Length: 294
Image (cartoon, rainbow, N blue to C red; front, side, top):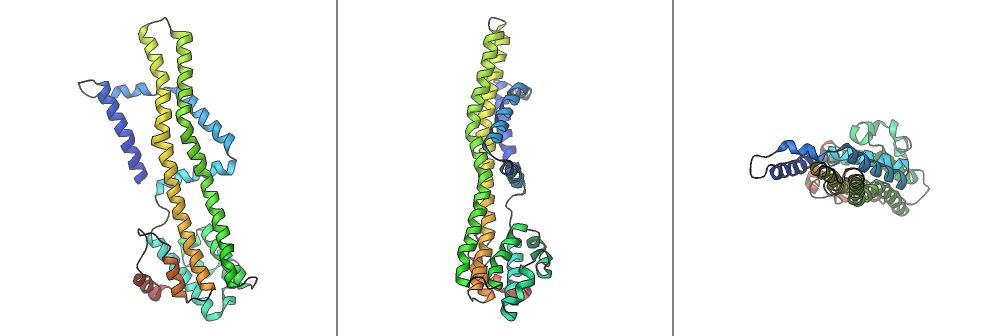
């Protein structure tokens, strides 16, 4: 929602400023805004943007660009309610492991999609990456392949890979933002060439219109870079940090439980990974878990 408000402010400010300038000292001339839009300039800019993306990145990364850009419309991927559900899920799982031993977790971590326990928490159960990350963290402990103190590097490695995979689409968007001003210059140069070859020597108004059309390409290149693609890439980066924080909560809690901490304390370790905007107090977490966490 906020990203839409931001774009409305950006476009509104530019439109009003241009209309004021076009109207001189009189009423604002919003009809003049149409003079900024020229199909040939958009085709040139769009071709350069799309073509450069195809050249610089493989298809899975380009799909990630599209997915992350759409994800910004939803805002931050996790709120406090999501974390409350996560903590209740982990607490119930840890309680089960504490009472019945790690072997009691086998049916849940070996086939997490079919787990009756996980299905009681629909948001977490529907988050494939988080569900798999939690299950993969506990699997080698449940089947005895590693000791608890050997778990942290395994989960840290998976987390690092997730971070890399998230950053790849952001890198593409950042490269596009950096390139757009130059693409705008290229579009403008093409427009000037057209003016010099086909319109120079003709009517002054026609020549001026051709130059204005060329300059519109430069405008949209700079505008697209600093007012659209650049801010969008930064927003994706923040969403990526939120995704990683969610995984860090799982990592810290699972490792703490595997090393012998009580379920409540293991969840408390995970709580300390949270930022102030979604972090509940220690007392609130304890109340939440003891009243409804299994």
